[in-house]
Amino acid sequence: MKNKYLSFIIGAFLALGITSCENKLDIPQKGVLDYSFYYQTDEHAESASNALYIQLKGTYYNYTMLKNALSDDVWAGGGGRNDNAELEGCNEFSFGSDQSFIRGVWESYYNLIYKANVILGHIDPESDIQKRAIAEAKFFRAFSYFDLISMWGEVPLVDHELTPNEYQMPKSSKGALWTLVEQDLTEAINSGYLEEKENADDNTTWRVTKQVAQTMLGKAYLWQEKYAEAAKVLNEVRSSGKYELYEGDYQNVLTYMAEGNPESMLESNRILDMSNPWDEFGFFEVMNHWRMDNLEPTSAAFYNYKDTGWGFMVPQKSLYDAFVAEEGVDGYRLNHTMKTYEQMNELGVKLQKGKSIINEGIFLWKRRFSSAEAPLTFWCSYNNFRWMRYAEVLLLAAEANLMAGNQSEANACLNEVRTRAKLPFKVATLDAIKLEKRLELCSEYTRYQDIIRWGDADLLMKNQGSKTPLLINKARSQGEPDNVVVEYVQYNTDPARYGFKPKHYLLPIPATEMRLNPNMVQNEGW
Picture 1 (cartoon, rainbow, N blue to C red):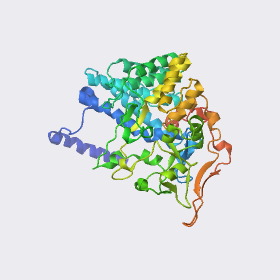
Picture 2 (picture 1 turned 180 degrees about the horizontal axis):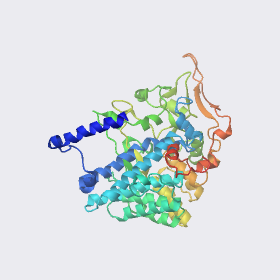
Picture 3 (picture 1 turned 180 degrees about the vertical axis):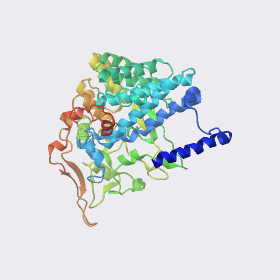
Picture 4 (picture 1 turned 120 degrees about the horizontal axis):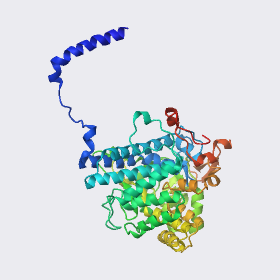
């Protein structure tokens, strides 16, 4: 009762004050744009479109760490057990629906979809810039839904800005979702407003190109087993001449030294701002670099690495063994992709006495972090984020052509990649393409979705998480010679608590979504 009375008094004073102060308080707002008019100019359309690229860049850490950890390419890694329990849970398949990386990726995709829907709902495409914004919004919406479908299955289809009574949407069928992906990508491609490079050497085009959209459409067809359609559109990307394989040192293909190279299909630009290095820090590179607090540089070439790296996402020996079986221990691509502990020792890095790291004696080389890209602090790498490269296009095309009955085209695609890897001609079979894709694109976040769609994941990862490898230097004192060995520790003893199981063919709908949306149905087994 007191509150109601007080509200009445305040209301009375406000009513009296309105007439006397009306003119004085009628002050135009500064720096506030009317939402209904915001998207009417080229400047506004450009800003809204650029926000899609910023949102994409913001997903990179969760996107890459989740996809890599869920594969059979890597161990979660780190300095020891529970160094990053969330990553270990992904890597060992001991996670639940409240897993933070899964929730982060899910939310990032729907944020990207929301931003795309705002553009599509508010921009009246009159100018070229506005038409490009529409085309890019359709690409990003399809890009998001491709991953949502391929990792979660049926999810809510949101093709417009939701009103409050639409917030709790149910799942849509995979057929309806794939239809939206195909329609968005086809319309973006046919619009004529996606950018195109002048030629393969043109590194001035950073926006989504027509060929990137065609590649995503080809992937969408391939995931649906529409092989002829996939082959057709992927072959068009190949014949465009806009991209080609990088012919520099293969070991640099993902480093800052090869940004914007002819093979790079899509990159998130990052710059070195000496006045504000934290604005563009590269936590991903540092996370994946070698665990240098437990390692010791013995060569001047690595002195600047002393305090860098956390040692996550380290190669599994099974990946190294697959390389050796195909290329031999001296394989060009193998030795440009990863190094054994013995090779690292020869280069000038060794494990400190009495120290251990989660590692099988294999170190990722092609994702190495360089002190040259962090002149102020080892957190601030300015290496561009890489989302797709042309080698993936060739291997997608190899599979699509093979399954569509185009053997000669499949052979050509497969062997273009193998030639760059300095390997002999090989007839394209599905097993050959699977292997080549694993080797060529290892640690590039494609493996998990591939082995899911091929139905290979349960066989390959049924025991993943049953043991953890430790690389240990058993020498304790400076007088003892190094004695570096790999030992396996079993932290999980209950098979029900680790390893890939049938339910993992779909990720769980995040727990937050389940709590907030009574119309959502959890995926089977979760």
